[in-house]
Amino acid sequence: MIGPTELPIAICSLLLRHIGESHPPRRCEASENQANEYETPTGYFKIESLGHAAINAAVYAAMLGQQSKAEEYRKAGLRLSGHDPQARLRSAQVLAQFHRDRLALAELDLALKAGLSPTEITNNPAWQRFAAYPEYAAMMAKAQKKK
Image (tube, rainbow, N blue to C red):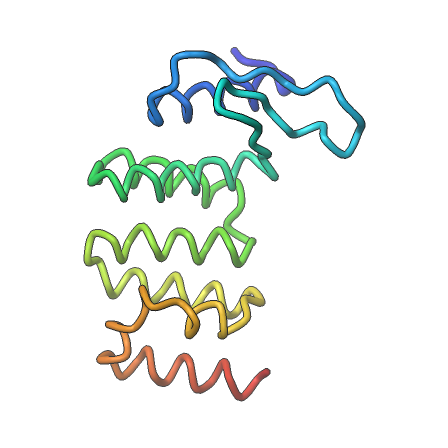
């Protein structure tokens, strides 16, 4: 079993393997505020949480068309960070990538209820096709009123 200190390294190694890098990340030996930064041969990246790492892996897998991997990472990310509006937004992006629009709309609704700003949706052209759905329009109108 992987201990809590090795888990971020294990997740990052897994992500990098899918991205195509062959070297495992190395934790930066820096100040406390850089405790979650990792060095790779191509530069540095920061992991805010394991849930975000999994959700980001899901988005990447979805962009590559790897639906089963994307779904696996999406579910793992939501188990770890389901309360986070950004995680819900990224989950919706994965679902939308595979045209699972009803589920994507449900995730967007959860993201808004968790505190996501509606402008993060309306300012992103990826969500324009959802304007054809009456429930999207109603959800966005309700969110705009709360603002």
